Length: 265
Image (tube, rainbow, N blue to C red; front, top):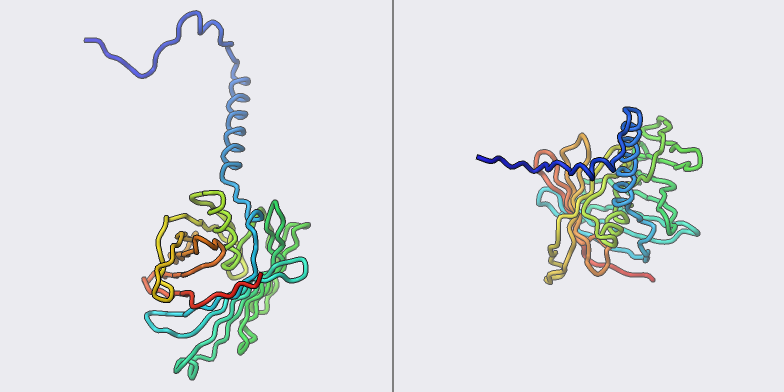
C-alpha cells in the first residue's frame, strides 16, 4: 500500500537554490515576518472615524426600563466653534416624574479631523445631584487624561483612540463606511479606560411610527462585564441610532427608541 502526505519533498535542483540560514539568520527572518504580518493586520482593521461626514441633529427617544415607559431622552450632535459635541439628556415623564427626581445629562466634546477623532472632554452629571459630577479632560500632546470622579482627581495614561457611550456612534458609522465586521476599542467608563469590542451583527429593522425602517445592527461587549448593548442604526443616516438596547447580566433590559429627529444642516 502506498501512503500519500500533503507535504511534498522539493526537487534536488529547487532545494539547491534555497540558501541555508544559520540560527541567528533564521531568528531574524522569523522576527521580520512576524513584524510585517502584524503591521498588515493592524492596517487592515484600522477604523478611521475621522472620515465620517458629520451632520447636526437633535433626536428624541422613548426610555423604557423593564417594560415601563419611564421618560424621554434627547440626543444632540452639534458643532461648537472648531469642535463637535454629543449631548444626552433624560427626563422622567407622566406619573414617573412625581417620584423620579433624576435629571442626568452627559456631554462629549471631540475634534474631527480627516485622519482621526479625538475626545477633548467628557462631562457627566445630574441637574438635581451635583455629587454625580464627573469629568475627563484629554491632553493628547502629553498622553494622559485628567479625571475628576466622586470628588477625587486622577490621571490616566492614553494610548491610541478612546471612545465613550456617545462617540461610539462615530465608530459604528466608520465601520459601516469601511465595511468592517468588528473592532476592539478603549472605552471610557467610570473614570477608567476598559477594553471593549464592537461587532457588526447584520441587518434588521425597527418599527418607527408604525413603519419598518431598515437598520444595521451592532453589538458592544465590555471586558469584565456581562452587559451587552445593541445599536440599531438607520441605513440612510449611519450616525442616527434608531434603537439602543442595553441588557444586563440578570437579563433585564432598557431601551431608547427613536420618536423623532430634526436635522439642522
